[in-house]
Length: 392
Image (cartoon, rainbow, N blue to C red):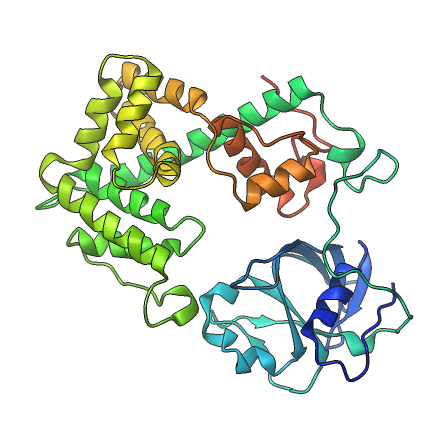
């Protein structure tokens, strides 16, 4: 595969064009003499952070005695290698998943180093041949694939709609149980504090972290612990801005209001009363959402499905509360769809679904399959790819 970068161009977009023109199995020469095999070019990044998310690469060994190293992570584009430091990425935790630095000019011998200390391989596109190609600007999308042109097993031999629903349901339940087990382990290790119960000491930081989904999870979790009066080391905010973004500021104020409200009544006690009260699932859903006001419904739904319901299942296991376990599972299975996000959109396109799932459990199934296999393009173990299991 040959690429073309216009001589003298000052457009970083040229580097991006060259990257998106790559095809699977392309070998890239690295600055240290090693070679890198491109297995998947990834997804375009957002306005903040790395240019590419979730690329899949394989560092080829120098000799037959060594093993290839597979990398899954982000890719950053720059016109010059030194721009990494000019832009301050060496201090920015948002770039700690970068596994390849793609540049035009290799103008610096200084290693590309992330904030966590890891060194990132560098590829200069000037080391590649230059055909006069009309290079597209953006990543290809899988909107018009046929079995003859599909690149992935899940697209060449797609599951039937019924089998797809069954597979996503199974994966969504697996994700629910994994979250419940993790919360149960955390709960078992905690002791009650002077102000907060053992349940709240486990649940409230998880809810605080949930407010940071898609943003700065570590910072939100630490902020939640501090607002509870517990010892916590607050990490440097992503982006190293002197003040939080307006959205983060609003969510932090709501977090403070919720923690203040629950300091007397207790967060888990309040939510447990809602879960155990008599009534249909729709009424319970409305009451759960009301418990999180003034938080908006979309974010409240995310907290309920990702934190509250798995936590209820963990408590039910700990206390052998069969009714609570059944109630949490039933609400989870009937919960309406959550707000669309990057993963659900990308996975719906990858699996060629006509629309995004309209149930939260099925959306969670998309997240589970993405995290387990699709992020690394491990098709041989994917429930929707080479491995056809998981139907219930």
